[in-house]
Image 1: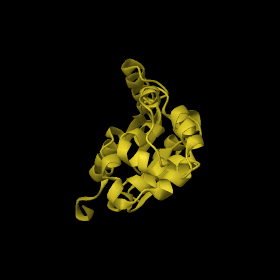
Image 2: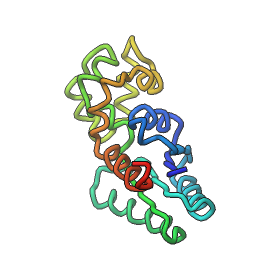
Image 3: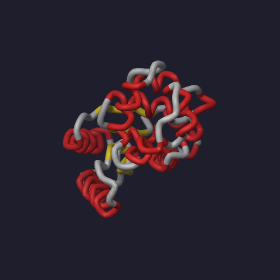
Image 4: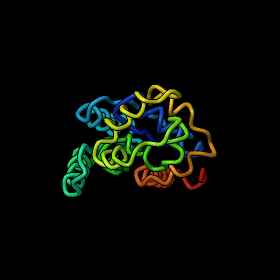
Length: 182
């Protein structure tokens, strides 16, 4: 095992598996942790027991840069306090994982079967989960996040891979690979 990725929910795991390049997922296990407290506990246990690099990928639940940085710092400190020399990386989706769907509006429109309004897109910057749920309720093509994720085709997800949190995760996984496996 090269590393563990700990996320909050099953849909988060499904999306990470769909968006991350296959090579990044080789010998990586994605663990669903539930809420942030459980995620931290699981991360600490894996670092102590398995001494394997851990990436935590959760929602920031905020768009305020200072709060986001504080959450990263606090979570990192909690995990690193038991990590000795095991690499740990905390990455937050700002404000929520669903923000990634708004990275490529052309793809989102194609998946939904219609183009979201400018008002919906403006609200999505601060409330992507809520807006995505509203968009899905109006769609005739997809009804939930799982269906959207299942619809992602390999040629369509390159823009999603450019999402900053995904890029950060790919870089972390690349950095913890043994040189012979790179």
